[in-house]
Image 1 (cartoon, rainbow, N blue to C red):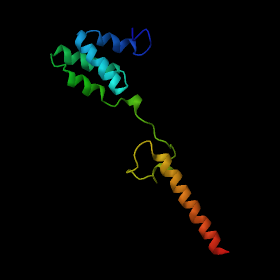
Image 2 (image 1 turned 45 degrees about the vertical axis):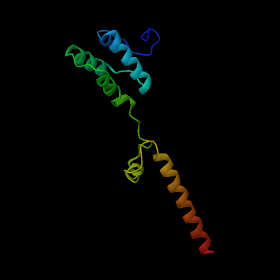
Image 3 (image 1 turned 180 degrees about the vertical axis):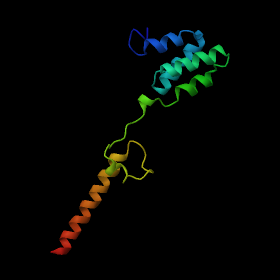
Length: 118
């Protein structure tokens, strides 16, 4: 059903089909909670845990909370001249706000300088 609706890719779905019905329900809850579908690597990992008798609800939740490479936020700026000036303490996704505030501050500085020169 999820494959038909294109909510999950075929290859991960095949791997997940080996999970018990209860594990699949737990996975569905984890998918909804994390707003993410499992990657092929995550599906294979869950199948392996299941085969080893170690696939618990906690393991499913833990696997689904992993950050996947295709879901990582991309940097707001590609130009290294900009990125090297943004402190590492600025959280991901807030780089643009930081740069805008810095430019606003700099523009106020320039205006003060011009008004002092007059």
